[in-house]
Length: 247
Image (cartoon, rainbow, N blue to C red; front, side):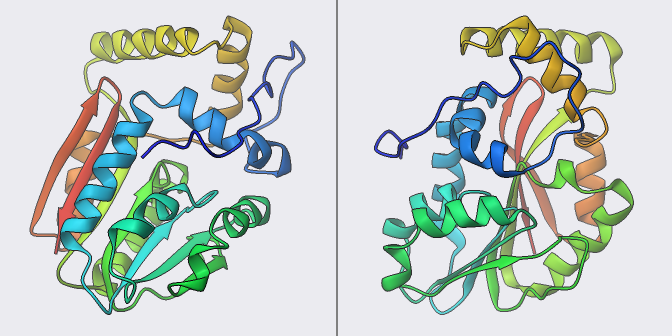
């Protein structure tokens, strides 16, 4: 399940001491994204493996698997050999550079199954239909809180019976002390991945107004409010979580 065969330019975007603007999934980020996410998200390869296993459990022949915020298409790349060819892939992302990377990564796959990569804002107009699995891997945290319930409801409505939404998300803790400890351990982890204090600080400031994490209980309440009958976490590492919601 690893991405070792794919060339991944190293993420050095935040080495500068100059003030950086808000984080954006632009051309520069797209160019180093695979390295960035692999070094920034603890157990990222294991999360990908678990996400794909659960998708394999619920994806039904003749339906669609959606990836909302599909970025460079890594999850679809991993899923392709695991799923029936009649299952179509639909990826949405609001970043044209990320979608270009995804098209290149998935070029061979599109010869064997239906693959649609759509340039769309998740808060805008798009449809979800005939879905058995919808993925939001490190995506919901970038959606404005006021828009999250509307998106969750759209996903719920587009899923078939026993369809699932799989979310991977950064969290905050309701307990201030634990929240600080979790963040400290996360920054220590990033240092082990080769990020300097400057890079950690600069990226934190760039993400401050862009990435807005919820508490676990807020995510559970959101999903149950729109109708999901069961919500459970399948992965947890300090302030990162994987959540599955069943319709």
